Each structure stands twice: as C-alpha cells, then as structure tokens.
Length: 168
Image 1 (cartoon, one colour):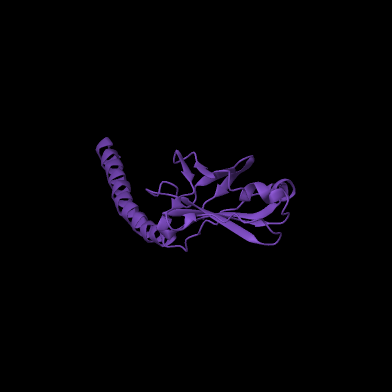
Image 2: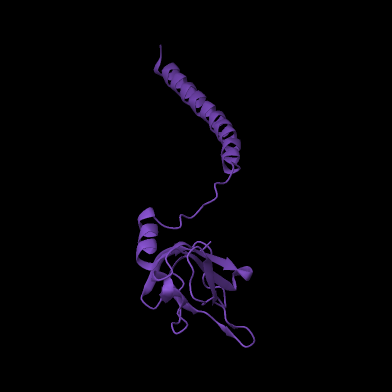
C-alpha cells in the first residue's frame, strides 16, 4: 500500500470518530436534561427545627421549674411569642417577676427585643403567681421583622437564660 492510501485511511478514521462524537454528545446531554429537571421537581423536604436536646429540657425543668419552651413568630412576624409551661411554681418565680425586664436576643440579626408596654393593655406578658401545670407567655416587639423563622435566639429574664431556641 502506498503512504497516500494510509494517510487517507487515517484521515477517514479520524473524521469518522469526530463525526460520531458530535452526534453522541448532544444525545447524551438531551437525555440528561430531563432527568435533571425531574430531580429538581422531587418532593421538597421541609425543615423541622429541633427545639432543644433532652438534656436541656431536663435542665430547665430541674433548675428553673419550666418545660415546653417555644419561640414563635406571630402577627406576620411583628411579634415574637415566648411560651413555657410551669412544672415547679417555686423555681419558676423568676420568669413571672414583674420587676424584671425580659429580653430576646438574636445575635444573627444583631438585635435585642423587649416586651412592649401598650397604653391600654400594659405589658404583653403574663405575670401572675406561677402555678404548676399552667402555660404562660410573653410577646416581644419585632418592629422591622429583624428576627425571622429559623433564627436561633436567647431569652433572658433576670438570672434565667435559655439559649439556642429556634424561632418557629
């Protein structure tokens, strides 16, 4: 065989390989695109925040006489409601003390919220003498909606401090 025939054969082989790769690449990308779209349309997983650990729940019950701590955004985010249930009325006295000013601190947002005092209603908190088995709440003003659902906050009332509560 002549060298001219060999080089023509190599050129034909190279042209065949190149031509087949042009047809294969678009076919692969077209079949991969619908699969990627269907993966995006999969059922979304909704994040459910964990309130706090079992150890923390035991701590708040034994030291402060409260459990079932929760923080929720209400009134379209304008108020943040902190609620708790009293299990030991003597230990829970500090949470209902009228002299103490509760604070809700959100380090992410860089804010410290307070319980507002309304002219006709007074403070947006319950502060009767605590009774075991009853639930109590207080609402913090969130003007500007700086604290949002999913944020980790701390509630401070005198010596009481609950850290890492997730806003629902």
